[in-house]
Image (cartoon, rainbow, N blue to C red; front, top):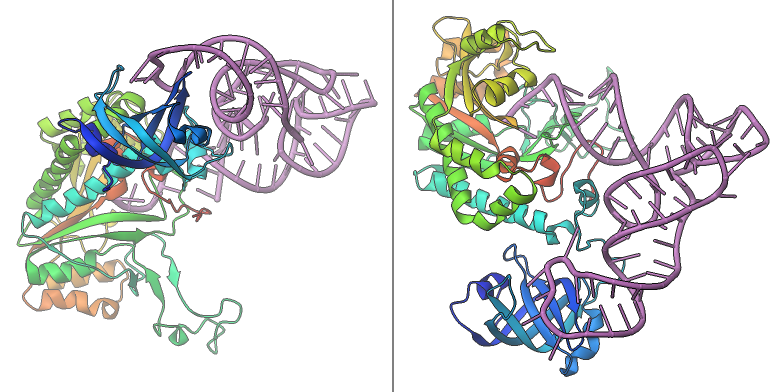
Length: 461
RNA sequence: UGCCCAGUAGCUCAGUGGUAGAGCAGGUGACUGUUAAUCACUUGGUCGCUGGUUCGAUCCCAGCCUGGGCAGCCA
């Protein structure tokens, strides 16, 4: 008999006989002449209620159907006589596929997120993490759908890279050299010309530069893949390994870039709102009571858009005293970004045109000579979710920027070539996949939206 | 990396300078429809580790370990 998922069974249009359901027992309630099993198979948040009559031969091993055990049930799907569910299964046979003894850590009670992190191999079977990872899957699908439906080409940029001076944080080294006795040069330094790639290599911190190559061939492209930062960060919104989406668009300026970022964020919210309604309601009930109203608010209103200079003015004129005083030319601190998006505007905010001194070499210099076309999208509760810019397409200005940032032109000859041969205005941004997932679920810690999170000192599972 | 908070039963927590308790989980029994079922009984502890103060430390002090929060870095 073909297995029916719990999701299909619960959505059934009529009785089904016979039916086969397989899954894991969430809880069992015994009465005198029968037992209730709640069976969940991850296909949806809810479980399917199974009634096992004491008269069945298989009732002999009902005691083995404990929380966490895997079972196969055959029987018939019938309208439930009880409250709380439309359908239930009256069992004819019950097979225990795998027992779960009393040491099974997941109980039918609330657990702390910290405890569940320690059992990352079992937490997907909990309500919360089941919902998180179903939404994660849907969100990934929605990302591809958004770009594919607009004719963007999906580019696989390399995970191992030799670019080490882009400035997007500390890098993980990739090497096959013997850590105990690496080959040395005459001056005593490690001789990386004898390493696997005959030079220093690292895990990527961004696929942007390679995405620009593809944008200058396919016009509209996006990347979606893992990214690695060796920063010693201990916050709820940083991980050593995370996923990032980086669209890159040729023949596009900063305004078009901001338009796309806003449209993208909204489309993702709309998709999850529509296709993960049950899971989102669970988050709204147990994680963040304001979740649905906030998501709907974001959908309905345009993002506030203001220049860095205007943002600084707002911060200077606010009554608020900040731990770090703000002045033109310094980076916006977390507290400043939070004030703008959570207190002043109470809305997503796109800040653009930052001072050139605090931004990387590839961003396009504005006519004022002081600012570059950087843009950050800030959202309440998380802060920066998107960072992007229009790229410098003018060869001479790019070379000036590189000199100013102390970057060797030779290391980026292929990147500079894009400006030498058929250069075009282009722009792009990076969206943190996990941060977006935090935003749509209301989950407050990035470690709880990644199946097996990597953070400094933690590489379990 | 800096600052702050917390480690007591499997989980969530209370507690006291005289070696410990609750709820849930587990076990046993009861119950003809439960919904984190209910009711009765019940098993269960190197009070994170090491040292110090003290007649005596789970409690006070120091160091360490682990977890968490905030900041920086950013997505």
